[in-house]
Image (cartoon, rainbow, N blue to C red; front, side, top):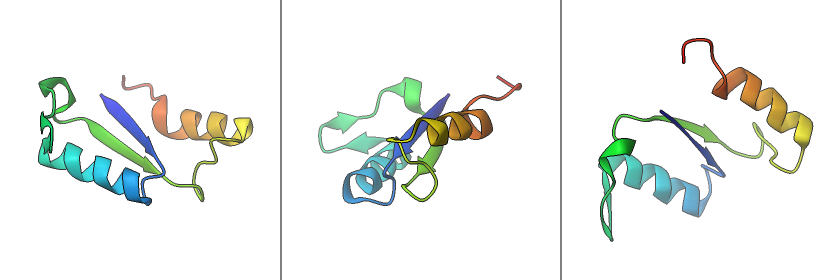
Length: 68
């Protein structure tokens, strides 16, 4: 499983990455389905979610693969 975290360098994105890597949050354990997931970290320089062309390019390069 791949999890795309946009704004990964920001305050919320950083916390989400930390929580997923630790396997728990202040609210409890992260569901088992997310354990071992590949985290794809993107910030504005790499992925502008307001630009359709940028999103399509990112999806083709990072998300969609022939392996899965």
